[in-house]
Structure formats: C-alpha cells, structure tokens
Length: 241
Image (cartoon, rainbow, N blue to C red; front, side, top):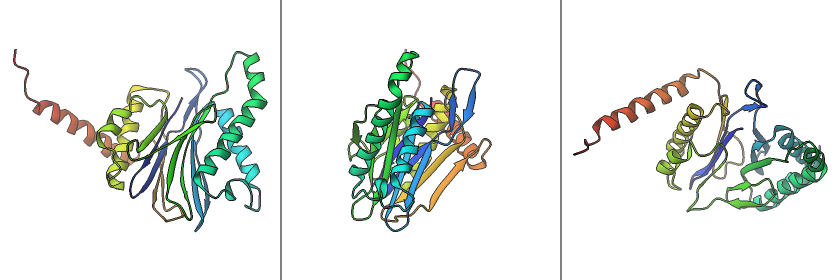
C-alpha cells in the first residue's frame, strides 16, 4: 500500500508520497512514487502513484514514451492540466486493456491511481485525483487536499489545519505530521518520504526534498508534535461525574 497527499493552497501546491511497497508481510521494498515532468518556464507536472507497482510504472512508462524524446507530443503538448489528466487516464485505460484480462485469469485486479498536480503556463496551478477507472476529480476551495492509498490515518490532521489560505510552511508541516501518524498506525506506509512544494507561477521545481529514516528535521517535528499533543490532553478540563 502507500500514502500520497496533494494540497492546493492560494499560494501553490504541496505534493508528498511515501516509498514503501510490499507483496506480503515479509516482502517489503522501496520505490519512489513521485514522478516529475518539468520544462522550466513552461510547465511542471507531478504524479503521485498508488496501487499495484507494475500497473503504475507501466502507465508512467507509457506517458514517457508518448511524450517523445523531442518533448513535442503527449504531456508536453497538452495545453491545460485538464488535458494532462485525460492523458494520464488514457494511459491507465490502455494498460488496463492490455494487462487486465491476464491479471483476472490469475485472480488479480488492475489497480492504479494517481494524484496529479502542477501548472502549465497560461493557467493557474491545478490538482486532480485520478481513479483506477480513469475518471477524476479536481481539488477546489471547499476540498483543497486530495489523498490516495492509506488515507484514513492522516486525514483528521489535514482536516484540522489545511485551508486554502494556510501558509506553505504551515501546510507542509501538517502534511508531514499526517505521514507520521499514518506510519505509526499502518506498517504498509513507510519512509523515505518525497516532498515537493510548488509556488504559483514559478514554472520550475525549486523545493523538493526526500526524508530518509532518521532525518533530523522529521525527528524534531515528530517529537514536538507528540509532546505538544500530550500537553494539550493534560490541560483539557476534567470530566465531572
């Protein structure tokens, strides 16, 4: 399993994903689930992948192939993020048509989904959640963050602190705390964590970081969150019987 989060703020986008994949309780591995397509000054496209690793890698590979070596087709030719979302959906459906029947014969089901965020010159940044069937939804003012994978453990924290007007710094800390809570409750999510923050109209990637096990900043953040939460509980009024 995995955990991926995309946040749309008034100031930009935050995208983060874990790196754990597994095929059973004794077969864990690490794979980066963040893919960046960047042409500085023109577009930044970020995909976070969830589901079967073979399925998501096949879809991303097909997107790379269709983009072409000269960067004039596919993702590079799309004129809007909506068009990019449709290209991702098309790639997923093509892989499902190719591999789905063979998987079903072995009792398996095609499973791949994505969070897509980014900006193409001429329009504002946009954020999408693309489902395994190829349909998708877009984040807006009332739903400014999207998740895929093991979403339930980190969602309450995002609900508390993520709003469109939140600062990039505060929202980033909230996203990282949601990862810590998810990893605490579910062993199928694990580090490293890949984080990308994108400021409106930059049209290039300037803030991208990987948090490995034992990362100094992440450890401090985790300890202060735990101690602060315990302090708040101690200060809550006692129950009167």
